[in-house]
Image 1 (cartoon, rainbow, N blue to C red):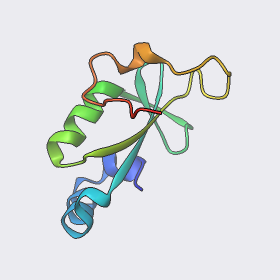
Image 2 (image 1 turned 180 degrees about the vertical axis):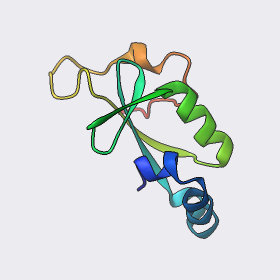
Image 3 (image 1 turned 45 degrees about the vertical axis):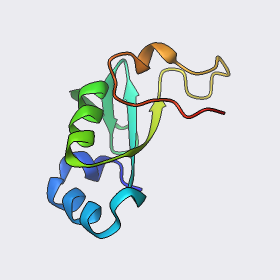
Length: 92
């Protein structure tokens, strides 16, 4: 699983995808619709849906998505944050 490194180091992502193909999972965390980096300590400028779209174009097929704004609030999934994203929720 890759997080910030997948976004900041395209060469590492490319190497990992070549070696492990569809076994690579990228974690995308978002606050206010923007990617959060470095364990949520940095707020990125990139829209989360755009980041997922670019990662998908690079060959990433699997994601773990965490909407920080609602994580741990027991309010259920943040379905609004999925809009505009190529990610599809997995059935439960």
